[in-house]
Length: 317
Image 1: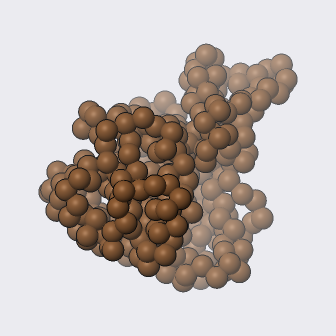
Image 2: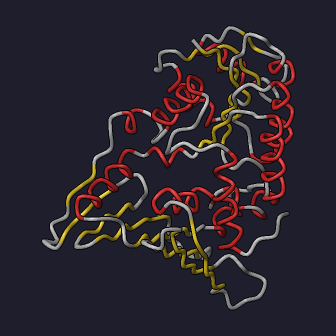
């Protein structure tokens, strides 16, 4: 039985708690949050053993076997760099920092301290994605991936999201889709990216061609931050097409043009998609001390960060 210490008690933490309660071998032991008002609600509702005053107090609790860091991006670096000193396994939500600079610095700390960790890229665990790959593989392989990673930036401003989040939205939100390029294609050989925006003050609209390391597959990544369109993924193989639009819905068709649905597994319906299997893989990490694909640690997922940097021509800060 692994005692989990959870830091953060927002909506995402609530979704993780629902899953953890269903997995044998994981125990909701301790929790804390910035104000502890939300943490107290989760503590009472889910029968945690300990409600700690802050993350430093929780970190020093010797009965905690692993940490779950479920806080906003601008708090992750400070908290995780402190937790690293205790050398216990850490599950942390993505992105692992507010910007590239923070993520790279945290990765260096984890490597130096030899911290076992896992990044919460839950879309890597979507059952319909894995089913889609199997369908394509029956016909051969994935030849091309087309990802439309549009961000409705105009809408986000209306939601009064913090300016520092909007400024770093490529890392905070687009990293979801960019990581899926590596999920479907494997590691990347080269990236050619073109800014499609005419106005010099808007550099969010890009078209990128990404080549896989084995040179057998390509990805076309489209990003238009002014459109009303959302995210979508299309997998192209020989005589077959798989489409996810929105990402939680899948269809496929071959040359017959007869459309067939790709149905999610029950745990992707019962819980937030990908969360159940993701946490099962974190349990495997605790047992085996290593990540098993499709899970990745921060050192591995840095390649997704570098890819985002190439696509959007980002600076480190």
